[in-house]
Image 1: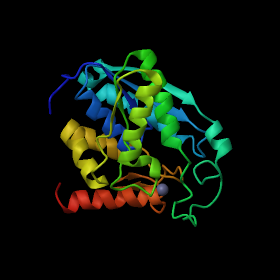
Image 2: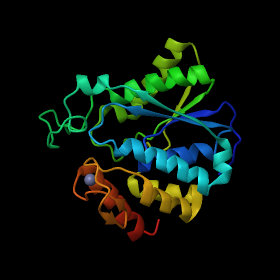
Image 3: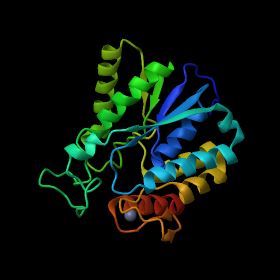
Image 4: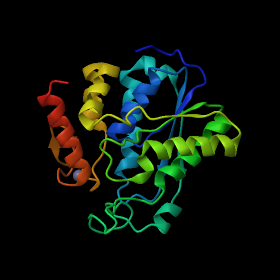
Length: 238
Ligand code: ZN
């Protein structure tokens, strides 16, 4: 993969999970400078916000070439999302499928709100590319993760902010197994180990149980997706 050849810089939506951590490495292999943005939307489990700092520190420590390109990290408070939605990610309710076919982990419009905030920051920081780990392949039915949604959002942001932002979605058409493979391609087994051991996906906020695919409760939809992806990654020798 070509290195540091694309000017204009990138802002990565970074949550500290497997997907956004892989996207961050992807951006660091590609752009001349990279910054990160995270969101505090009143998550039930603060562990996600702690993990993103641990992952960032670990990437800086273990990958000096990436560290040199890695700039400012900003966490934006968007607690209003929690007040507006009644979902299993922000309230203490059981995760289940809703009558509309969407899991109740869906926070309505969350990615649209995140992208609008990211664009406002990218505008101020003079960054051209906005990188997000949304994915249509493994997506849990979230309509704001679809390719068409992101493309429409790019048009809306560019009109509304009078800029030429490029919204990049490196994981859009790959599954979790291929995301593990991409992590290894970007940073070798050292980075694959970092993704496996330090990133957080579990909806239950559990980091007490160790599995070969990382830490988590092992039963929530996010853990199941990650465990299945890892099994496929290992079984298929990707
Ligand atoms: Zn879990």
